[in-house]
Image 1 (cartoon, rainbow, N blue to C red):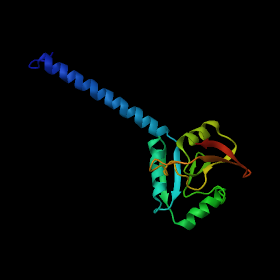
Image 2 (cartoon, one colour):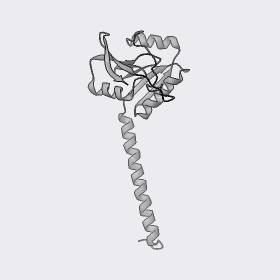
Image 3 (cartoon, helix red, strand yellow):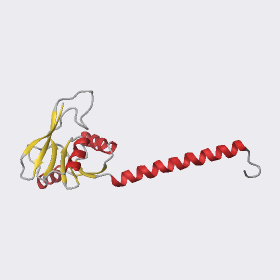
Image 4 (cartoon, rainbow, N blue to C red):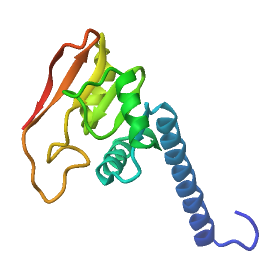
Length: 162
């Protein structure tokens, strides 16, 4: 013990050092997770509140989301370039690790896509179904499907949400 420092002060200082070390460890662990989080690039219009809500849900789920507001014409051109059709279209278009993610797709479906890595263009939740991420307000929901878009444009059910 140093001269002039009581046992209580020494114990308090030691506890503070341990707490600071633990907090720093949590910070480093979270920073490492953020560094490894898949990056989702989103194009949306600035006026679409449900798109903003979906971005928030994806960030809360641990994704690194980089959203960009574009005008409607630019968004349509992005959809066309990524193989989104009228049948699979929704309000915002995203990409993650080479896949298109169209609309209000749940985080769990994106994680499954990245884990399974199917030979596909991506996944879509067409339209804006009530109860999907970003459209989950007022406690209401309706069944909807996440659609797998194969490379040739063939569509199939990827997951049903009841």
